[in-house]
Image (cartoon, rainbow, N blue to C red):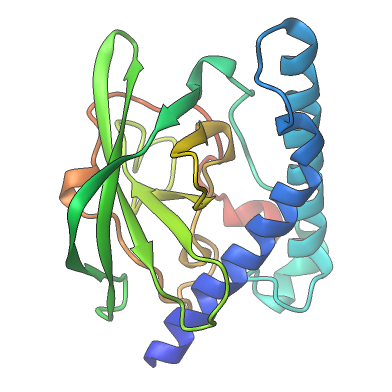
Length: 219
């Protein structure tokens, strides 16, 4: 598959994620400091998931093979877990270095190893590298966090999941694993998707966000 296909795949994913973020703005306008804020955030995520299911079922850019869309019953998710949502500072590298991220089809995606997030899970300190990729569109730059964890290949997609964030000027981000999603190649092998590097493999389980896709539910 040509590099253009890889870029198209990433752009489609990010356009959809941006739509979901816009839907969620009301829930993110205040920090989750009380039960009401958490409830609003939960409702926002549920709306995003419903919109994604509808897009996958009937959207022109759906990664679900066309012959299976009519029987598509929706994606599987963990219950929303507020403990896996973090207000995290991006620790920027003073001199970001170029990286080459491989894909499931052997293509290479270039970008910058931009910084890292640190956060606690089950009493363990975790770190994920953050990459800044240029999709060639000239639009806003995304921060890309591909990762694997102890659920990968068992409860979640074996090749890993993604989180995308819009870069901001404050350096503080809403790192919410409840919004972790599968790449398009999890649904259709015709897509080419970046694979998380070894340095972004967590030893702990991240039981939040999207689970492994069961294609039999669409047949």
